[in-house]
Length: 414
Ligand code: SF4
Image (cartoon, rainbow, N blue to C red; front, side, top):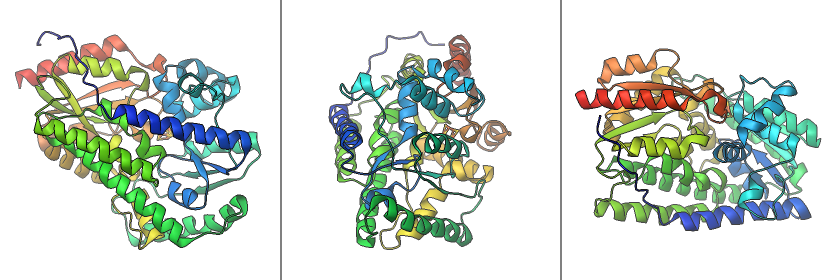
């Protein structure tokens, strides 16, 4: 294996602006929490945020908070607190970290944003089970805690082809939310507002896709690890002009990098695709581990989860229903495999890393033979690394390093 080089991290200049936008977002929520001048909805990360925004809610995303707990490495100490109250160490470690942090009365928001000492209190909780059932149990815990209503959309799972019956079912569930949200928000539903929010969300999605697609350039101007940071506005600010402004800025910077052949990983030797969740508490370590060997992990199913190509402001409910059901995580293995094959080709990758996240079977795709089937079809080798999104007790750094180094040697021999 090539000798490990000192890693020179290339700063993305747009990050400064992103941090300002994220800060404004969290302070606005905090202000609403303290003054109750706006209603607050909690929403799952691929839930119907557009409907909530169109009805005047400010929106908090507990998964974003869960990822912050992971990235700040607070999560591992919080998880046992939730475990002690009956939430198993085997279930989603976003859920257990988030509930544990609430029970302990701490939040990573306090470190990043002075003056914020808690997550904003909800007026309503709205989930979509398109990603997993854990989100329903997670929100149910808070609904009982805050004594506020919980509303939900129940999505078909393991979908091969998204058909009209799926779309009709989800669209009608979305419409059924409206009278309840009107009662909670005190605002009348306005279709024009929804069309406006959806148009902004679609623009955000289109730009975010273009940002991620820049990784098809050789060398790639962006890595998966960059993507996990820069996806923040696509998750929490989609449906706003702010998110659109941000991705225009970021895209321009990445396109300049491509023109000037600026590589995210100096001396890019191999190009890898990441499947599954990030290990939030090890982002920097993993970024350095791969970059130090001249390997660019440049694209992922994870960051692509906030691309909603089907959004159509002319047909809001049906198009939202379709977009939120066409997501990778909702689909059957054959649809997932066809998708990854397209990604292998588009991003010109030499190998795939599958993260088998112990507490998220929903986003671990290596457990039923997929890596072997895809390798047989494409000849592209893969490595499975065991770990977790948030519970660092389930991560073995030594084993990860050894396995990654052996995999890179295998690529060199190839
Ligand atoms: S998809 Fe996985 S990480 Fe996300 S909420 Fe569900 S179980 Fe947790």
